[in-house]
Length: 251
Image 1 (spheres, rainbow, N blue to C red):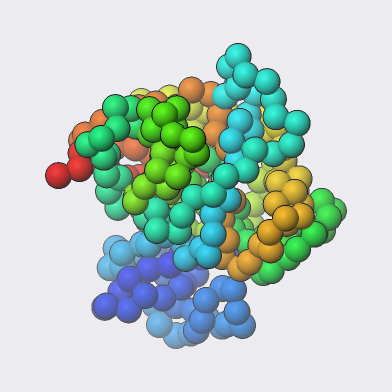
Image 2: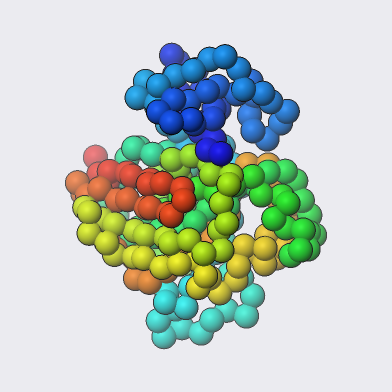
């Protein structure tokens, strides 16, 4: 099932995508809801980021192909991205004037279904609603210069996500692909994640309460491509779809 968050006639709603239509839900997918008799053609709605996370946890160095000459971390390397950095499909990634290198990082994103704390690896997947495509936009020079990654990873527009939440998906063997202007720059299967999704959920929940709508960006493979003014960045994940965003230099 594909769950979208969308804008239609000035109203933001959640809905179920069926073919070329979206059927509205009576409430968010994180609370009791039902499908109501209100249908829009997808061409008549604006797809938004698929949920509004209270927090975003992201994982660094989680594919061996992204390590290069670095050592694999002994435990998941977790950092935060701000909810205000989230944008949806078709929204513009703003390249700040002050950064010299802005990269796209193609990532599978986990969407949490409900609250959990100290959950085991065996029970972790029970708390997942579904998955979406994500781009962990990264200002590389800021990432190297700063003592932490607050602006390198969380500047406004640095967390594109979408186009929807796919609930019927085995995330353990799907291909994650990143393209810039149609040219493939990243492509790898999630079978090569160093820490798999149950491990990430269990580890994160050991320290913070994961809540409904929270996002976990699971890491990026290979060597990401640089995004410049006028580029189109696409993140495609097998079984989900394509997240596409234009890039524009800050005015």
